[in-house]
Image (cartoon, rainbow, N blue to C red):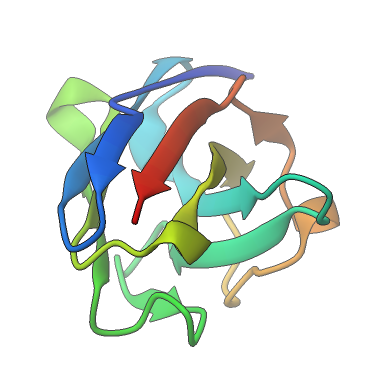
Length: 125
């Protein structure tokens, strides 16, 4: 089992950047595939970006391509989401999620077993 805690959210102007962190405790972090999701007010939670556990290959939702970058530092048990060129449409609570192993590109909520509490990102125009 792994426990996830996100941080790094805040208020930023349009065009700005933020880096979110997700610190994991529990089992070996490198055994887990990682995903970032977000939920805007009045909307369902949606997939943003994911990283496979074995190859560290990444995959992105269209809304994130070219602007967001996922990375991980297994020595620090931490995953990151670098977000650039932010727009008001990126305003949401951002969640990191983890699942043990697997070989696919997991982009659905039910495919992840562990979730953080979320961190608020607000982008002003």
